[in-house]
Length: 260
Image (cartoon, rainbow, N blue to C red):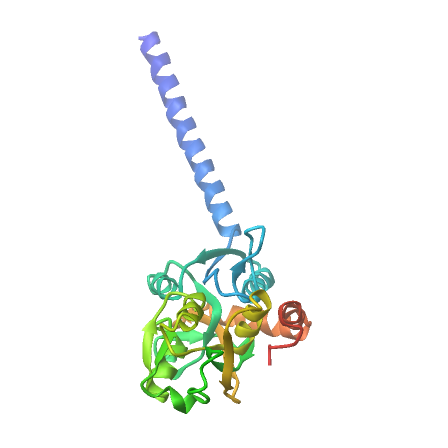
């Protein structure tokens, strides 16, 4: 009987010890989870100079650094999820990311489904054609022409709805330039700063800007509808604008301030 009592006592001690260890582990895990706040950011990773890989294969760019600065200001770690635009948007819709930093233009159609932060850049839309193309000289000349764009982009909507062009679907802006250079599309629309940066990297590119829209197009962080992160991100952007951080990042990539 004494032996049975000793065994029972040992078993009870082991059970209590196991329960105690489990509670400690769970508490540590919970504590770590609470302290480690992560902002999951969708970005293209092939959209120079906004989001791309440098010679060391590091993800860099204007939008990347703005996202990093915003997350740091908020007290978050940033976790980038790279994908082509359509796949990136699908992942965002599936709530696999929290925000998109990828020069997303603000439109009424998108506002119906998503929320936007305050703008952190303003660009101008350029009409880009082959250097030998003298037929397309203005946006009004796009009627019936093939325009290479990512199918769900604001550029595609503009080309189709405003100028009655035929959209030729591509995955990245590099693909759109390739199609125009190889006469598989008549033109493409893109940010003027994107094109000038591309020319800096590829000075022999047989492309030119035929026309540019005077009205600026603001870009902002894309967020899920009614996400409380909106207020945090707007507060962070306001602070980064006030202390000159956004201007500093802009001048690093563009030699000018594109934030307003």
